[in-house]
Length: 142
Image: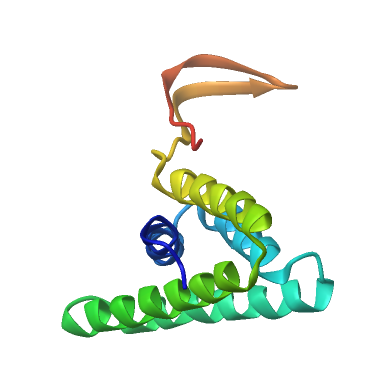
């Protein structure tokens, strides 16, 4: 049986997976979760990637409103359960390491998204230079 702290990490992990689907953080979260659950076995990792893709598809299909909330709840619970099962089957030392890796993924999913947007007015492009005026907004995903 898992201690409360590990259950909380698994719950946060399930929430992070669902929260990240459809965002800029998705690619990193998707690969990290597949790596954790796959435990170094390429076939298992591939199966987890397919499950994660299915999660994203289900979320996108649910749209908005009450149905979307229901689907999100179901998916968070599903991923929490998978993560709890993983943590339960690991030896104590490895369990703590995986829990730390999972917590890092949760933090990655919760980090503010940063992106770059360039808006050029009356600009002239020559080779790799831009001549003209405009604004540049930078946002970075950490």
